[in-house]
Image 1 (cartoon, rainbow, N blue to C red):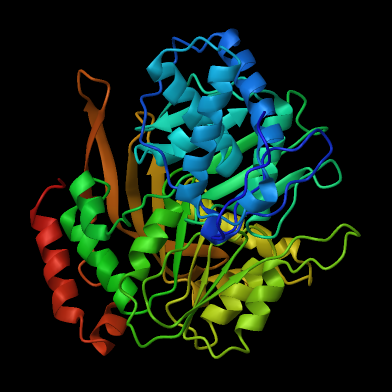
Image 2: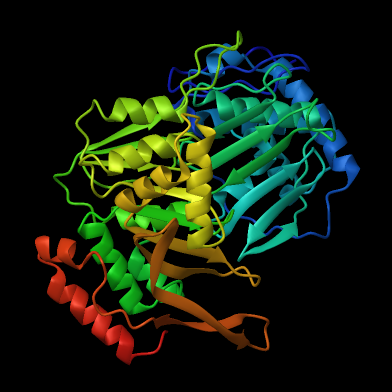
Length: 475
């Protein structure tokens, strides 16, 4: 009744979900589906089970009716139209009773299953979502405005969810299965993806997507949102411009990578910048950028290229700045060495709850690498390498603030001495539960990087920002 349909040649397209145990082919960049229109996600009013039974029936008939090899040669728009026509015919022949809106919804869902990321497509289309958290086939949560909420999104079963996970990670040449159940990857727009699959995840695959905004934030926008005061934002611009070595510290979801992206906007266009990341997320706008990404081990457990090897190789690539997406282990030693050997303006992020804790974590990570260096030697290396620590914090109301801009001054005995330039003080909360606060200057009029600012001709601008910050309250 439905013969195998032929189709015109075009861009490559991903195959549909495969039976349990199968592995779908990689999705090419040209096959990235057009995002569907945003939909409101409401925790209540979950679709009835009958909808998913009907969808499974129609989907099975569709797979029998189309020629996937020919469909894969079509461009995404033509492929969607082809699938839509076939699904409509299947619905008529099988006498499935659906309203026009229900039929449109079913067609949209099936197109997303075959060509895109299935039920995730409406969520990926929404710009207001920061995180998507899938806990097995039947529970999907999102974070909006710093708050987590349950959605009505569900998958047919864990097999479909696992196939979608495979489709996502295969885009960047990675895999996730029982032999390799943990995977870090990214979407084509740079959004961070983590998958942990059975047998480690007991209730089905767990998929977490940290979405990136399509419009890249700037420090001026962070000032507008209240993440930093106008004068604090001006200081950060100068810090990025005069090639201070910067560590951005913060907890999970506090906005470290966003802030790092903002600071890189003030790198001169003629500088050669090399980035090292576990999953490439940074979105630098400079023309001379080399992006490096670590590689996980292969099926035999060999061939891994860790972060430490990337940073070591950077030193042979004539970089002017080295930017590490996240410092997690012994590579901290190599980053500090790079900062202290002529690569001024290098930057990185790490997890910590305060600038003081960030220094302790940095020391601990260097110790993890072995080498038997005395604690004082490590601290001397930190002091001679790191100029500024910027602390990003996610507050309990979901808002994100830059709470510290802190200089590293030196050693006094065995203790690293720091100096705060700006702090964020919480003053209470409004009737809606939003925290109120302000950024305040600590009164430092001549920071340690003053001479560096003078070298780059920025000392007047720095003095004006510091003087103004002492006379004005925060936003």
